Length: 316
Length: 290
Image (cartoon, rainbow over all chains, first blue to last red; front, side, top):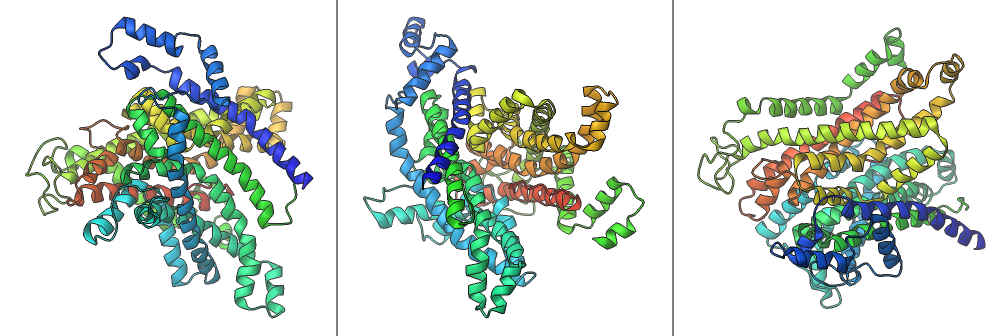
C-alpha cells in the first residue's frame, strides 16, 4: 500500500511540469493573439474611456508575465475568473456543465465496451469467419465517421422517420431519470459506436496474440471449458490494451463531446466552449480548455493505476 | 512473406515496398479513391456540372437525374458543391499535414540529436500540447485567429505536430547508437551532413505512414471546425459547413447525407492507405490512431 501511494505521488508529480506548460499555453492562446477583449465585455459601441477603464479593472494593460502569474495564483485558489459575457463565475459555469459531459462520456464508454469487447472476442475466436469480417468492416467504418454526421444520420432515422427518440434537449437525471436517459440515448450511441470500433480492433488484436500463448493450450489440455479458456484466461490478459486505448482516447472523447453536445443541444462542457468561442469569452474558454487538459492528464494516471488492478503481475 | 522475400531478392527496398503495397487490396482501393478526390479537386471547373455558388434550380429539390445529390436551401447544386468542396478539404489536409510534419520532424530531429536539456524541454512542451484534446486545441486556436482556411490548417498543424516529433525523436535516438552513424561521426562528418544524409532518409518511412494516417484526423477536424461554424467561411463550399446547414432542415436529408458521405469515404481512404503503407513496411509503428 505504501508502495502504491509512493507510485501515485511520483506519477502525480511527473504530471506537474506538463500541467504548468499546458497552463502557459492556455494563457498564451487567449492573451498573445490579436482581438481586444474589451469589445466582448462592453460591446461594439463603447467609447475609448470606457474601454480604458475596463482594461484597468481587468488588468489587461499589465505585462503578460504578471497577468499570467496573477491568473495562475487565482486559478490555484479556485478562482477561474468571471465570464466576460454572462458575468457568472467560470467555476460555477463549469460545475453546472461538467456533470452533463461526464454522464455522456461514461455512458459512451460503457456502451463502447459492451459492444466492443464481445465483438472483438468473437472476431478473434473465429478468425477469418464471416463474423470476423463483419466486425472488421464495422470497426473501420465507425472510426471513419465524423461524430456530427453520425449524429445527424441517427436523428434522421430515429427521430424524424421512426419518431422513437427526441432529437435534442436535456433534463437533469435527478429531475426525471427516464426522460434524461431517453434524451441521452442518441448522443451516447453517436460517441459510443465510434469508440466501440476502436475497442473491437484492440480486443481482437490482443486476443489473437493471447490465444496463441502456451498457457492457453495448457488450460485447454487441463480440460477447462472453452468459455472459461477464452474469458478467464484469454480476455483478462487482453484487457490491458483496452484500458490503454480508452485512456489515450479521453481527449478524443471530450472533442467528440464538443461536437455532439452542439448537435443535440446538451448543456455540457463542449457546448459551453463553443458558446464561449462565439462570444469571445476568454475566461470561459480558458476554464473549459484547462479543465479538459486536467481530465486528460488525470486519466493517464488513472490508467497506470488500473493496469495494476487488471494485471497483478505489474508492480509499481 | 518468405516467398515475397525470395522473389524480390535483388530489387531495391523502395521497389519491394511498392510491390507489397500494390498487393494490399484495401490500400489500393483507398489510393484509387484519394486519386479520384484529387482529380475532382483539380478539375472541379470541368467536372462539376454547375458553378458552386450559382442558384441553378428551385431550392431543396430531392436528388434527380439533373441534380444528382439534390439542391440546397437556396437552389445550388449539391453535387457541384461537393466537387468544389474537395478543393478546400484537400488544401486544408495537405497544408496541415505538411505543416505538422515540418514542425514536428524539426523538433524531433533536434531533440533526438542534440539531447540533454533541449531534448527534455522540447519533449515536455510536446507532452503539454498532446495533453490538449485535439479538437479542443484546434478550436481554441481557430477561435482566436479567426475562422479561415489558413487558420484551420495552421491550428491542425500545431495540434498534430507533437505526434510527428515523438516518432522522429524515437527513431533518431535509436539511429544515433547505430554503427553507421557512429562511423560518420568518427569520420568527421558535419552535423548537417549526419542529419540530412544519415538520419533523415531513415526517418522518412515512418513519417510517411504517420502522415497518411494523419490525413484522416486532419480532415475530420477540418470538417468539425467548419461544421461548428469556425472553419471555412461561407459561401465557400466546405463539406462540414454544408452538413451544418442541412442540420436545420431534417426533412431534406440529402443536404447533410451526401457531404457527410464525401467526408466518410475520404477519411476511410486515408486510413486504408495508411494501414497498407504500414503493413508494406517492416515498421512496427503503433500509432493508436485510426
